Structure formats: structure tokens, C-alpha cells
Image 1 (cartoon, rainbow, N blue to C red):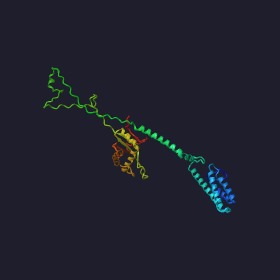
Image 2: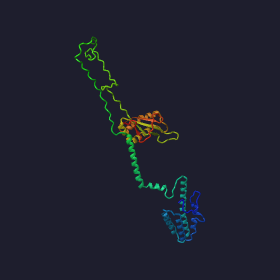
Image 3: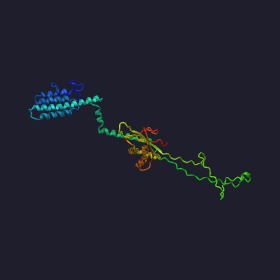
Length: 355
């Protein structure tokens, strides 16, 4: 490891153990100590002491056992009395340990300079490794997915509106005009002379030579009488505000910035609006395909290109729905007074929501 429990060992200016000095010092280094071993038994005992001094922490037992096995393999090789190759093999084993310690010290210093707070024994790396284990990750992932699904369902329920169809009253048929009032046969015989000379206004003449009667006066729309016919207003389409769209999705140059568009769909009724919003992901994907067909990616779109996009997009969306559900599409670029940015998910809202 980069630090050790031996305070007597020399330190580098960075505050870590000077492993090069510990291993290679001509007077006190481990390599020099090994080189002075006169026999195989002395070499074994000296190297074992060095290994146990280097690996003193909890959890180092496996490394100690592995290194002792490698030591016995080196000592068993070659002639029993030939000590020189055994010293060289043990020196190589210690230098491998030295290289590992120096590399760990270098990594420690780099992370320290980067501002990483490292606990050498039970740090964040151990905690992250624990969280990434399947027995912990799977339950946490399932709980997160269920929570996210509940939030999405609640948002959809709050924005899609009523699921019952909106009943539209049928237009009333034109009623026939009321029949003329019958003429009372018992008319006062004493009629004014002037009244006799005037033509009768109640009974129009039906003779062959009679002039056509004056057509009845049309009903006044402001007439409060029940006989006045009030035509129903034409149903207005329902608007759908989608998520603000960016084009192009990835910038092709550092000078040209992407353009942002507000897209408004017009449908016939609220049931159609609900159906469109249930497939809003497919709708957005289809809109981006339309953008790719018409709008350029290296510059801002012109007005005629936006008009062309508004003309072809309803047909493309209706082909995706396999029905005529989209009546009209407005594509409003940023800067236009009609532009309205979408701010709250699920980005399929309507200002025409019935109350």
C-alpha cells in the first residue's frame, strides 16, 4: 500500500513512503539485506521477515501466503547449494513488490491532488462496490422503476382529462313555419269604410291573377321567444401543445446554434386528443422524421420551409395512426410571438381541456 504503519521508514515530499529507498538503499535496503544471506535457510528466514513487515494489515493474509509460496518455489529451483540464483530470484520477487507499492503511491498522490477524499480502509470505493452487487442493485432498481411508473401514471391522469366521451348535441332540424291563424267568421259587420277599401292582410289571394304574397320576416336572433331558432356554433378543434423541439439534434458547427420550435397539433375532439397523447413518444419520433425531411441542419429554416413542414406533417402523422386524426399542425420557431415553451412533463397538454 502507499502508506505503512512503520513511521521510521523515509517519506517522499508528497507524504508517502519512499519505497525506492526502502528496497534499494545500499546500507539498509531490503535487497541489500537479501544479498547478505549466506545460506538457503537464512535467505528463507530473511525474506519471510521482510514479507511479514510489508503486509501487516487486515486482509493481507492471502497476499502473504501467495508470496511465501512463490518464495519456496524460487528456493526449490536449481542446485541446493547454489545460493546465487536463489538470491537473484528473491531479489526479483521483492522488486516486483516494490513496483506495486510505487504505483499505488503514485495513484494515491494523483487522486489527492484531484481533491478525492480517500479513506484507506473503508472508503467510498468500497461502498460503491457494495451498492453495485446484484443482491443490492436488483431490489433498488425494481423499487425505482415502480416509483417512476407511479409518478408517470399520476402525471398522465392529471393532464389527459376525462376518459368519458364528450357528448355533442345534434343540430336541431329546421321547424316548419306555424300555419296561419284561422279567420274568424263572426266579423263585426260594422266595419269602417276605410278598412273596407284596404286589401285583407290576413288571407292572401290565391287567384290566378293575384300577386305573390310578401315572404314572412325572418326571425330575429335576439328574439327571446321559444320559436326563434338559434343555430349551434361549429365545434372548435382541440389543440395539443407538445414538448419544445430542438433542430438539429446535434450541432454541426460551433458557430450555428440549434433552433427551437413549438409544435401544436389540432384534433377533432377530446377523445382523439387522449389517443394522441397516449402515443406521444411515437408522435415526437415521427415529427423529428418530418424535420429531417424538410428542415436543413446547417442553418436556420426559412419561412417557406416551415410552411412546407406544416403541410406534410399531418399526412405523415395520420399514416402513423392509420386514420385521419390530425387536422392541422403549427410549427412555431423561437422568436415568433406565438412561440410557447413547454415546461412541465408529460409535454402533451391542451388549453382546451373541458371543465
